[in-house]
Amino acid sequence: GDSVTQMEGPVTLSEEAFLTINCTYTATGYPSLFWYVQYPGEGLQLLLKATKADDKGSNKGFEATYRKETTSFHLEKGSVQVSDSAVYFCALSDRGSGGSNYKLTFGKGTLLTVNP
Amino acid sequence: KAGVTQTPRYLIKTRGQQVTLSCSPISGHRSVSWYQQTPGQGLQFLFEYFSETQRNKGNFPGRFSGRQFSNSRSEMNVSTLELGDSALYLCASSLEGTGTGGEQYFGPGTRLTVT
Image (cartoon, rainbow over all chains, first blue to last red; front, side, top):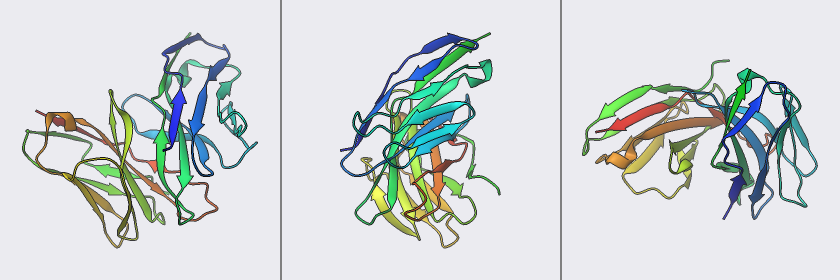
């Protein structure tokens, strides 16, 4: 079945440091890939997405590139801020036989803490 | 456009009771999914509804059930609550269509505590 593996952390960085959170996946079909972010006490927010190989998703300074050859979707940001402190989830959505996307499969999440 | 709303936000129940959680999707979204989030198991898929039909189901016991109404609002029910059912229950909606990329939009969740 589908699975997502991401570095579990926690990750602690100083403000303006470079961030990488690794994510690899296993899927039988042609998945779309996502990064979601969860702030304390809240639900998940979609951070960025990529729907096919070599697509780059980007939002709020975060980027991730869909690498089919390495089945990876690593999240990067050049300069983190204190406000980026949150839990980050990598996820995939695989198309069912009907051609639509039915469910998300998540990694276990990575807690990021950014210190001033 | 209003986001996904879930009610109630917090709930405390006693073991053996049953509970119903409600979710209103983003206007125009016809697919609603439910997830359970716990510290130990992470985010796990419960089920997904589209046009009042359950299209997919995760590996949860039959005590967990759901339904969707004609206006796309959805409810999930847990009967005979167990301590292990304590979790954050998240609802997500999505815009159907093969061109959408499959992203889902989440509500704030219902925090269920079973004592």
